[in-house]
Image (cartoon, rainbow, N blue to C red; front, side, top):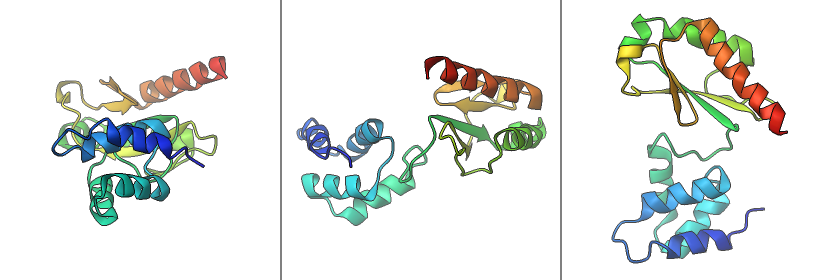
Length: 158
């Protein structure tokens, strides 16, 4: 059960801002990993903004999530430059390696696989982003090697 007092503290830190909702949701998601119904309800109570409005913002923006995700979020670009440079093959190899489909999380909670719109580095297409790190000039094999590195880093710290 989340410590909802932390929600109140985050909301209060923005009380002098005119439209702080996106900042509040960003900080709350950073604290709890995702925006659960319980957490969004607490934000609504503390801000006195209708829950429906808060939920609308939380589900509109792709970097907010209302469900739990893996430790590492893999975002595969599927815009035209990546597509024509082989992003489908890269994605297929990632799905096979992880054993999941787009929108799913691995059973061990390590990886969540998502599509994303343009990451703004079309010159090195195809690209993907793992958490906040962007990788370009991908081949299917290079993409899997990157994920293996993340798995190895996780097992070293486990």
